[in-house]
Amino acid sequence: MSSSGLSTRKGGWASWPVCRSMGRATSLVSVLVCALTLLAWVTVGAAEGERSAADRPDERRGIHVMMGSKSAVPYAERLIEVAADLKLNWIVLEVGSNFAYQSHPEVAEPDAMDAEDAHRLAKLARDKGIHLVPEYQCLGHQSWREHVGALLRAHPEFNEAPDLDPSAPGFYCMSWCPNHPDINALIFDLFDELIEAFEAEAFHVGMDEVFVLGHCERCKGTPNAELFAKAVNDYHAHLVGGRGSRRRRWATATTMPA
Image (cartoon, rainbow, N blue to C red; front, side, top):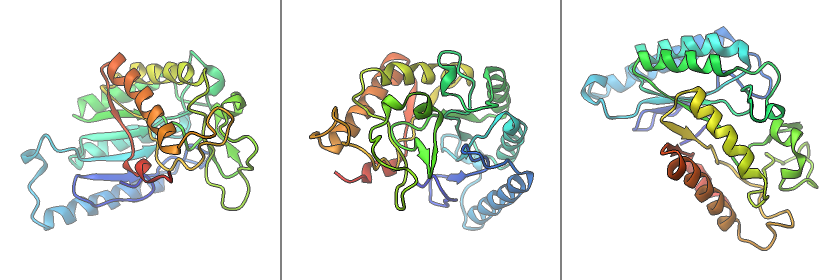
């Protein structure tokens, strides 16, 4: 399952990059274009003889959206309404640092949405029969090109490879260190805030395309697969074992180099 393009694979998932969290402006045109794309996708599915949505209430039919700043909230509301019209029942909302965290305000991007916005979106989704799942990209995706995400800007001590230049040709995204003694306490606070604000029964931890691991002194010598597995188990223990939430992540994470 890709987080970068529209997918028509069976299972009903598509990815919709409406609001890029790294500073791309929200566009009404992009919302309308994507809505039409989804409409075409659903129409094609019906033409192929698939049953109606009412005939398969337990099937997940959803999209992944990258949330922008507070100004993107009205577009997210419209998205929920369009998704309901198209008989979708899940939306993964990649919030990340675009939320005004009370526990760690330093890791929020400027003009971030707040808990009141999240409650409003959650109520609208619930009224429309949609599961709204907040996402925080974990481990990888902590930068994009030369732009470092809010968490590593505020806490550079968590950077897995501070000696690497994120603007260098071929570099993809920074990662945080899964073995840093303070990282889990901080991100678990963020998880908890998002779950409570969105009144969520499930939570998405991202974790796809983690290409920078095993660089820092704490991680050197440990196989990347073990480092990745440790992070997966840590997040599972907190979210599922501690909170009883359902945890989600992108399947592409398992293709990372050993």
